[in-house]
Image 1: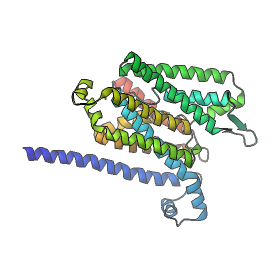
Image 2: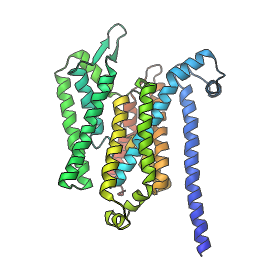
Image 3: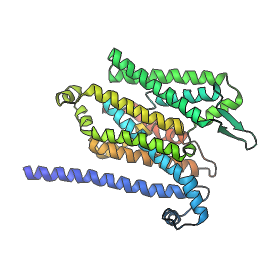
Image 4: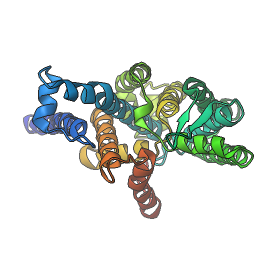
Length: 352
């Protein structure tokens, strides 16, 4: 009997590991396909050949200077948003928790609007009939500060008023409405040029992230992922309730506070660099729960890989639907996430 149970457990572990490996291979394949997709179509073989250093000069310029930074930014952003959503759903015991439902994204939008309209960081290129940001670093800093402000308000309420995780979500909804209202007022009193710059920023664009921004996002995302994997057993303990977790020696309050800060930091950093990208943190964990269950030893890595895949597929679709025009990736991810969000509301998703 004991040997049978051991074999069943080993089979369970092997299946989960196999899923993680398959997801990783799929992410690599989709990345190579995404690098080749675009106005200048490159074959799968050409992409692989160029990545190995044997491609043509034109292919090297297209891949290494234009497409590869975009693909890496998509992977890093997808991983960061997915892991932050997965952790938030665990520590808040709410299946609808994510950066977009806690006011982080809306706070970033307000900060960007403030920088562009009030501080004059926006501009438009009339000759090329396009919109650009005059001072992207100022916009990024303001977006980051404003998005973190939402987190500190929620954490402050939790510390001084001892509010429940459910109330944290409601606080995030209230802050989202507050920031959205502030952004609307700023846009109402802005000029046409500044308004166009704000709209352009909120669309979300992976192409605006340089190697320096990608490095910053990678460091923050890696720190969050390592912290989450280190606490995977604590998240599993929380599945049985706070009291059970505390009886097992888990410091639930510390776990919640540190987790919220790191998740919000990662989400705020990503959003401030690439713009508003909704629903990735909500979609990826729920899709993977259907596949690997709620064991965070496997849910965290598969959610990270799923987030990267969703971002890659969304960005590829944004570049290919009406090529050479690139659609806003935020709109693509919203089309993916909104139906799932409604499904969770109607069906009443199980609590994490």
